[in-house]
Amino acid sequence: MAEDREGRLWCGSWEGGTSCYDGREWSPGTTVHEAIPHHVLAMAADQEGRLWFGTHGAGVYQYDGTRVTRFTVVDGLPNDLVQTLGVGQAGDLWVGTGTGTSRYCQAQFLNFTSRNGLASDGVAGIGEDQEGTIWLGAFNGQVSRYDGAGFTTLELPSSAEVYSV
Image (cartoon, rainbow, N blue to C red; front, side):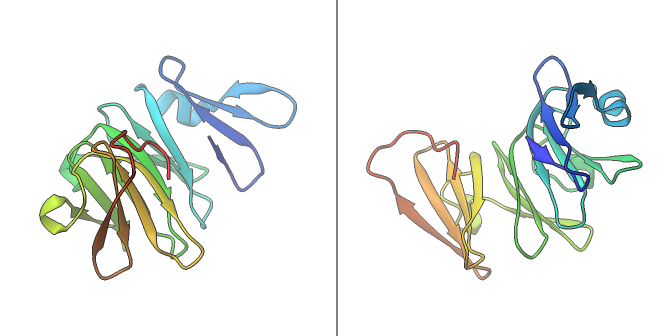
């Protein structure tokens, strides 16, 4: 779920696309609902009021309140199956996929994988702490910490998949 700049709550679903709650009732987010025909797995709102939708196999969609823009592997994503999204304090969008993570800033994707120090290419959870450190949860039960310069891997006490950070 994500909240837009008007205070409406947006929900993405597997079968029903997107829906918007205005405080009184749910309705399809008409422009977004028609533009995103794919399963929505993740959502985020950025500081500029844009909504981001991660999908199962169709990449990432951005809704700026007027129009919808789609980003895929052609635009630089590591994979079109998006597991999770997060927005950092600096306004960068982080995209977690099964084949790495992307940081979208200055209108381009910068990709990271285990070759760059990421704990696992399978990223299922993204969060940020008060200091601006990005945390990425992995399918292999590890957590990566990104401090702006590089990644540090932390082992969890169990090897369970990390879906939320």
